[in-house]
Length: 101
Image 1: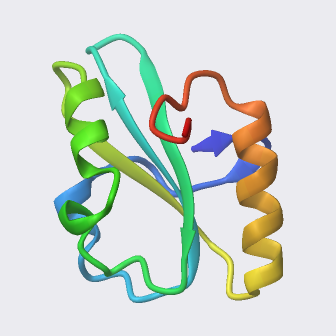
Image 2 (image 1 turned 90 degrees about the horizontal axis):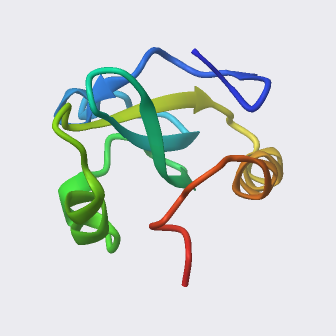
Image 3 (image 1 turned 180 degrees about the vertical axis):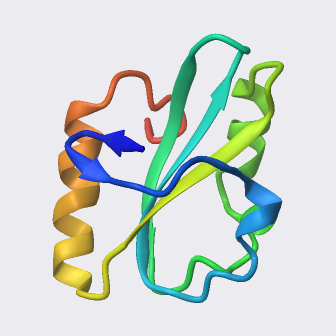
């Protein structure tokens, strides 16, 4: 899936990411059966960390549509590159209610 000119994985339900132990940029999203909505952009050294323990979990739940919560991942080993991509996407993607302070 192309998100902001980056080649992310196809969206998967958040629970399905537990086996990906890689450094990555990720986009949490939801859909209403017709359209995707971006909720949050983040980066991590280990995508396998439990999303339901994430500090924004409640925000994701309160903003999810009928289609549920999904995540797309872009594997990026270099921390500085991950931070650059995360910043770029936060500035370019519409929505992102859970990135707002």
